[in-house]
Image 1 (tube, rainbow, N blue to C red):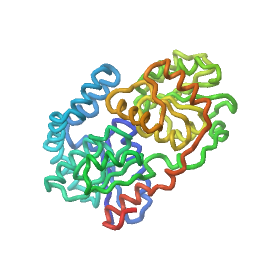
Image 2: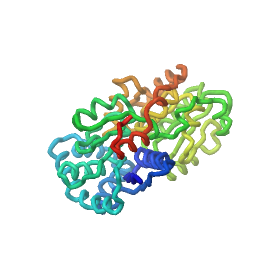
Image 3: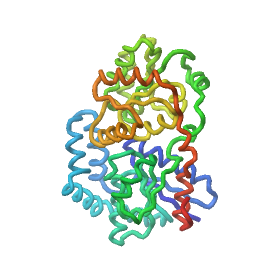
Image 4: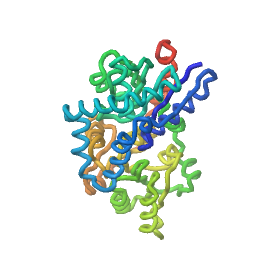
Length: 366
């Protein structure tokens, strides 16, 4: 029997979703025991506050703080080293005690600070269990990739050179499928998706998303989409932000061209039904749109790690990026005029669960 310990953090779907999906896939194996835990909780109240409480406050109250804070924590070498050391010294032993409870064959971390604390212990010989770090961003990987993790799973093949440079030559890196819902790898059915979601069969539909937290300039994105006559419907996906949903519902009550939605677990249908997506926080949602062939525009946040991801989207031609409302309107006009191009190559990648199991068992990694 192999035990896989998956550590996540409830600070966004980019961490929780891969943990859930990986656990579900591994749970189908008869000789595998899967344990999913919040990795921040055992690291102590200080770690939880700094990594969950403070970011959520900054995202909604003091947005201007995020850029300098990210630079200090993730990019400026002295404070970067200090943060890594603190994560290891304070959080490492506490994580180690939790690991001892389960005696796992492998630890999979979907959250960067947890990955760093684990890798810190590995480098010092205080943890013998193999560690796998899951990376769901395209760029800004200096706090995702870690020396000490023997395996890194990435969602974009373009991320591999950066991971290699940061994590070193010893680690194994695989671009995998299975960290987003299986439905994304199926051929999109526009008419069927619109029918299931109660959407009009004709006319252009634009999705506006602020991610799981519902952050960024969601209202501005809706307004710019409504300025285009060819847009028949704008759908705002508010995630778990109930305040945003209530505010937009009041603002657009009676507006036939706007539909406000809460958190959804059928994003594959939404992206099959839509003609374009405006999204604020990058990450897995942009990847999902790329696979689905739904033209995507990054707009409405553009700070910290999202800024670096936006630079990579532009450089690699993976998504449009709009820094202003004028740029957004122009980008949306272009997006609505281009054909849908689903990317089928991701469906042929090895599955995350197969790679993790091979790593845990010491067999060749696919």
